[in-house]
Image: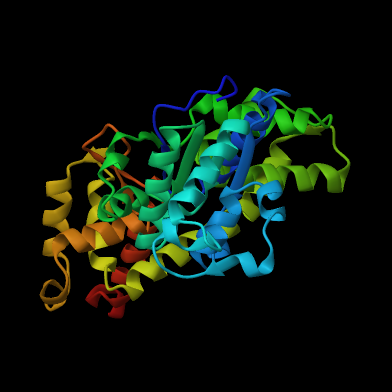
Amino acid sequence: MADGDSPAADIVMYGPRGMGKTVLLNWLKNEAKKSGTVDNPIRTSWTTPDQLASPADMWSCLMSSDWKKNLKPDETKFGFGALSGTWTRKGVSNQALINDLISECKKSPLVFLMDEAHQMESGQCRGLLNVSQTVQNEAPFLLVLAGTPGLAHFLKTVGASFVERSTKMGIARLDAQATADAIVKPLNEHGINIDDSTLAPVVEDSQHYPYFIQLWGAALWDLAKQKDLQKLTSQEIAEAETKVENRRSNFYEQRRATLDDLELLPAAVAIAAVFQDTETTTRDYLKEIIADNLPDDSLATQSVNEHLQTFIRHEFIWNPPDSILFEAGIPSLMKYVLDRQREHVQKVSPASLA
C-alpha cells in the first residue's frame, strides 16, 4: 500500500472472544502508520458497529479530516439507506462521494479496521463491502473485519459474493512458547523474573488461551509489585492461582448461564462430552447431537442448523478457516459445563437423597 498498490483482497479475522483480535488490530494499525512514507502516508481508521448511529457515521470514518473540513452544515444530508447513498454533498451524486474516497486513497492509502464486525447490520455491512470492492479496484484500500466465529456465517448472509475471495484468518490459541513469552517478557522488562520450572504450571493452566494468559499476567504482576519482588516463586504462583481461578469461574458461569437461558444446556453437555475424547468433530455429527438433546418443541421453531449457528455465535464451538472440522471454542469451558452437570446429577440422584 505504501507503494500505491491495493491489497489483493479484504481480510476477515475471526475467532472466539479473548483470543486477542483487538490486540492484533491495534498492532496492525500501528504497523500501517509506520509503513507509510512522507509522500504516501497510510491513513488508518478504527471503529465498531456501536459507534455508528447511522451510515453517515461510517462515511465520517472513511473520509479524511481535511475532506470533512471542506463541508458546510447545509452541504450534507443524512439518511439510513444503503451506505453508498447516505451522505451526499448538495447537488452532487452518490457516485461522486465514492470518487472522493478513491481520490483520498490515491493521496493517502486507507486501512479501515472494523472490530466486532459480527454486530453490524446487514445493509450497512453490504454497503461497506461494496464500497471496499469499488475503491480497491482504483486505489490502495484495505478493509479488515474482525469478529467472533459467527462473523463467517454472517458475511455469507449479506449477499456480497466477492467476500468469499477475502483472506480469512482464524485467530486461535497460542503455542506453548508464545504463551511463556507473553507472560515472561513483560515481567522481565520491569526487572521481575520467573524460572522455567515455576513458569511451566502457569503455561499449562492458561491452556494457551490469551484471555487466561492476561489473567495470570495481571495476578503475577500485582503480587510482584505488592511484595516488591524481583523473582517470583511457587508461593506467588499458588497465591495468583486463587485469583485467576475466581475470575475464570465467573467467566465460565456466565457462558454456562447463557446457554441455559437459551435452553441449550442439555445439548451443550452432550457436545462437551464428545470433546473430552477428541479435539475435532464434523458438522454432521454435531447436528445429530444437537437434534437429540433439544427440548421437544424446539425444532418446531428453529432448525438444527439454526441451533448450530447459535452455538457458534456464543463461541462454544467453531471451525477455523480452511478446515471442515469443528473445535471447542474453549476446551476448559466444556469441562466446566460437564463438572457442573455431574454436581447437579449427584444432588438430585436417589442415592444422594437416601
